[in-house]
Length: 376
Image 1 (cartoon, rainbow, N blue to C red):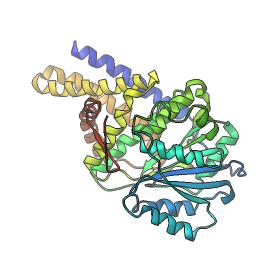
Image 2 (cartoon, helix red, strand yellow):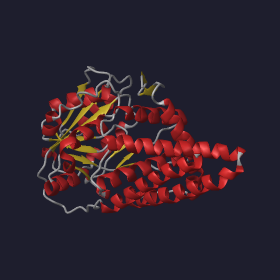
Image 3 (cartoon, rainbow, N blue to C red):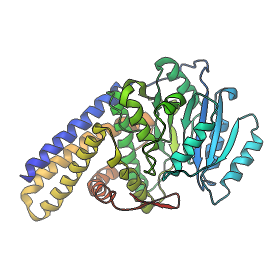
Image 4 (cartoon, rainbow, N blue to C red):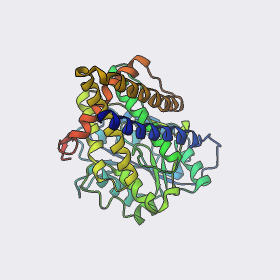
């Protein structure tokens, strides 16, 4: 009976990843056509204790290839305890032609980041909101590509790619493989018009539509999820207006977590919001992925005591290894990353245990974020 259940859910998982693979190819890769700058953007950056990361972001802002009259940068200080604000002010003094402002966050809900974004959007001067994080690095044609796709597609919501800055450690390799699979799944879902996830480190959306759906109202009790919950609201009645900017010129780089504890805290934070998704497609994906990995864990452990299970578990694991690799390989080629095959195989053995642990504990285990403790 167990083997039958394992094969049934594995089959559902394989069909899901196959669909992501097809959707990935269906999602058109956009090249820079050097269109005239027509749209105006308010770039919003919440930050808390980011003095070591901000110089990289600020340096990349300096290189933006977009008319300075058509964008502004709004930083929101979420009660930083270091001199992050001073770093921005020093840069601001050297770059007076770039319209830059710094706001102090006003805590109104259980979600500091949503409060910060809401405040910044209310103070913004331009019709398009672009969000990124303080530990990121942007490319010079970032706004150019948002401008281009807005002109050509007339969307309400644009998700764009994020990748990790390369490091040399197994922890990085494990995180990177997990992240690459997430990017591939995101692009694949947008490719067949069933978006369910995105990354707040690289988003662009209409301020008018943000206000029409009442922003983050209804999700403020959940600390994270500013990106996904807003996506859910917007696609509820306008799924065709949410698109993915599959462009190498729009890729943002960010840092992976520095240690295993930070990585686990991040994963607990991300997993804790899934129970509040309103999109049944999202819930279904989460259920299939979790159960397939949990069944694989049970199968691996069972095979240690009953060798008859080994061949069936091995077949499932091998098929999963192959179909996951196809999607990850597509993503690697797009974001111009690299993977080590030995690390991939070893990570694939660990991953089902990791996913099962995160999923089973996220509903009751508190997590730490930016030096604060939040309840799941």
